[in-house]
Image 1 (cartoon, rainbow, N blue to C red):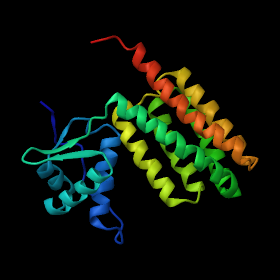
Image 2: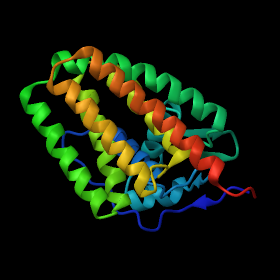
Image 3: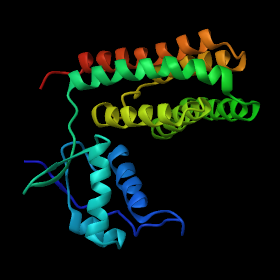
Image 4: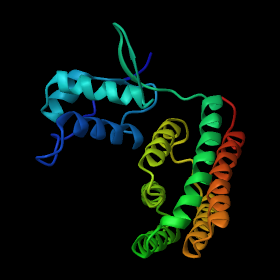
Length: 232
């Protein structure tokens, strides 16, 4: 049976005065899922979460429906809300679509990225290298998410960025911390450096190829990790 998740470490919801309540709740639960606080297959305890966030169950349920539309949870009548389990076939399909979006984004980023954005990406890349050198996988993982989000923001295409984020979130349900070991982190860093080189040169072809390859190499790393795991 799936485990019911109460999220004992959840704190009252904090949001800006102008931020819609349902949006804030949705983002909070989404972070809990992406960070692994609510695991794939886990059942959300709506009553407990509403109490801990100090929000109404009506608002929580509305937020949960937005997460269902984004593919993070499944709502089963008379059973409750469950974090989705993503199959290997689904994960591979998601990687292929994400690679296509990355290629399109790479072309746009090379053409549209500003000097300030390039400087931010370069600084973030340096911070990721420091995390790798310190063997701080958790920090690298978080920085990697930020790096990809910033890349997509540089595309100047909000719809593209939204689709890419949705696919990435679904993949997190399958392969959280797949970047795991030092060798994989180093390959990821090298990929990022090639993407940055293309952006800095404002070379659409180089950037789109580097970004697409980065995603496809991530797919291969996932498969390599799975093949190395002992059978249960």
